[in-house]
Image 1 (cartoon, rainbow, N blue to C red):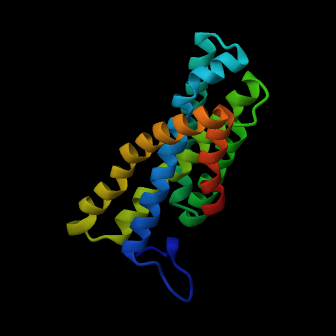
Image 2: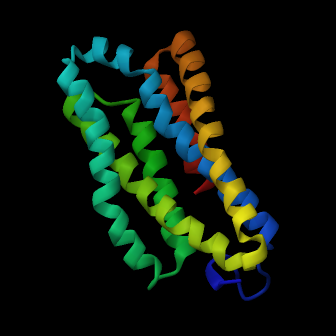
Length: 184
């Protein structure tokens, strides 16, 4: 296994590496889909037009796809575990800050921050799994990692709608982002 999740004393087994990265992938998509669920309350709260609402998704995607190649490059040159941890911290911080946004401009910036953090994580994590598993077991391991995508998306809808209905859209972002801040 690569030294990405190892220390001088012990290394993380492939099983635990996959379990941790798959769990984080679940949070990755939970954070992303909370924004979809609370789009209407945000639109009403800030008086956004349909175009502005669409720009929030565009900000996320720009943050993601403009920085993903940079993280791909860095992942081949720097310690991947720290790049991943930084990505988790950044996307989770962006999610929490989305819940305290004071207007359209700040929310736009925070959604771009989520995209930037997710680009780091999503670009680098599969390579760690590939390094940890032999070719005969790699496909199964990556399948487990990627199954977290629809599960996280579904949880984003569930958590986002439940929290938003109970306490408002701002708390949906805060509740979705806090676990990632703690795990980073």
